[in-house]
Image (cartoon, rainbow, N blue to C red; front, side, top):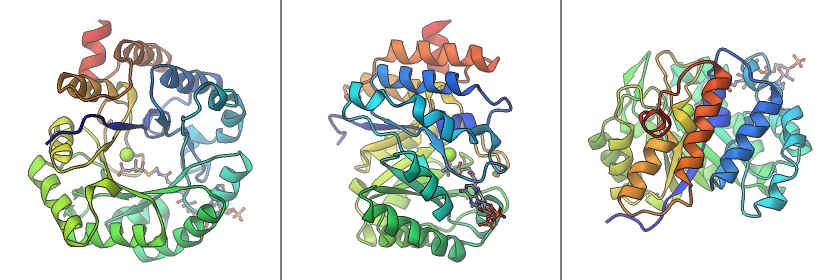
Length: 302
Ligand code: HMG
Ligand code: MG
């Protein structure tokens, strides 16, 4: 059956903004995050500590974090995770007082090389000391496995490959694994099959999250399949922003507003004030100079 509540892992300030042509002023990013928190989101992926040349849109993470300093006192359960690819990124995150990080692997060699400049095995080797050191510092680590359904260079990705990279990430010591449909080609039957394959390897849905990009309009249907399969953590991006600059044909994430509309319609609690959230995305769309791709944002604020 369906759950009574769902935890939304908001990725707009990271996945959303990393793919915009324009780099927003750091004060606008800080206001975006503060407004997301005010709208009730309690896990907000705030930035990434990757190489600044690889993702210039997020190169100002060191300037951003001091501007978020008052949020933890205001919202005691708020988590502000960041992406970290390597030990250099971890050092930067720890120096900024970050309390949660995420590492990000690929199920395919093609994307691993493009996104991390090394193959799958070498990227797992790069993450191992990151997960170990973060855990020792009391910082929980989420892991992503990208290209969990399809890959733009390799086509459909074999389930075994996804499960094997996913299990390796959990074995390194990460507390949660997010299944990334980076290019949005997955469909609900594939979601059910992937969850079943993880269960066969002893990984239940309580350790999994889902991360759908909406390229083919499948994100909500896929989310419902994941909820029916027992998943309780869903990634989404305010206003439907997002994509990966290193993944050909990746478009925006599942819009948080579209997700919240469906969940509330199903009687599932999220803690999110949908009107406040949609107003935030409409405001941000103005800052970015383009309309939000989210259907719910347009319906609620048009
Ligand atoms: P590399 O060039 O192989 O790095 O890049 P390196 O280890 O060889 O180091 C080269 C230089 O970069 C060194 O400087 C390092 O210090 C510096 P030098 O000694 O030459 O002066 N350096 C750094 N500087 C600052 N911060 C760092 C850092 N690391 C090295 N963290 C690297 C390898 C992983 C760094 C690079 O490939 C990278 O930054 N990739 C990030 C790509 C990215 O952010 N992609 C988007 C996120 S993934 C995504 O969106 C998918 C997701 O949403 C899920 C889904 O949808 O499926 C998560
Ligand atoms: Mg993504």
